[in-house]
Image (cartoon, rainbow, N blue to C red; front, side, top):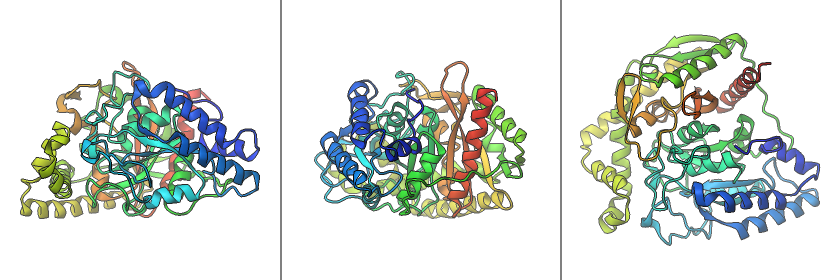
Length: 457
């Protein structure tokens, strides 16, 4: 898993500050790991080695002159390949965008550069972010970093694989229905979907402008916070610390009904054990349901299909054969969403958002598994979920897409592994809009409690 002491952003920032290593050495290490692993895992579409080393040298020189700009100064990161980096092709995982060299940085790319981060490349994704498996990419499937016969989850699957293996120390993904949280949970790292509108999305190829969110995949909650703050335009100082919020006295809504009725038995067991850890730490857990949860999938599909079809209308007519077959089918389906159904879905979105907000009233966060199943084998189309058999895509989206409709911040933290497959299981925390930092503070305490339980202390 490549996770050892000194391999989180916060640890490396301290090492750099003590001048025990350099950003050039860190960047060379990441590039060496890409060279060694990418042919098997297919996490990167484009590697920008020369540019990265030049940026690392500039970061080292600035640090030597006493001008380190932030906690990310000299840290190697990666971008999901639908985020523009000037002078680099933004493929969005598709042949449709062959030769689409970005003329300018996305705002978030500029913010990372200004913070001194080193960008090592662009990561693989499900074509145009329109899928959960990362199998439908013009560049081939990204493969799971623990078991390369399994899916990484998607659409930000290459980003998650890169972070787990140390090919980059964090990665920036996008999340329209779970595309940060699903691969983070599947691969055993932390994924944050901030509240809607917190992170600017200009210079990013959209899937649905009203559901898209941008955020980090990282190894720890603290690392996710450091990157999130930078993306939000508040780059933390080199010695910045995320203060944990004690679990004792924290009120959590334990999502039941829709969120608990279709779970893999091993995922359910791992999640329940994590819930008991929270109880023992003093958190109050209160069962709560979302009344119209059964309508979530229909509302989501009518919105995302139509939004995506509208964005792709011209290229779908001009270059239909350049899309992967499955993504092309979904885009064609979007052309048949009726206006009245779209308007009804907009109303449904508002109802679901209000119900999630009501469930959060008087509580610090909501709690449920991130994915109802462990990472499936590549090529799997249907999966057993409890007593049902569901399409893989629907199963993987089931527990994450509600919070894109509701637009609340959501965080996934690894909470254990399924016994049979050894695949990671993620626990999802959902907070109130405008309180992403509070959610991360709770997530940090959860992360520490789970680590103590795992170590037996």
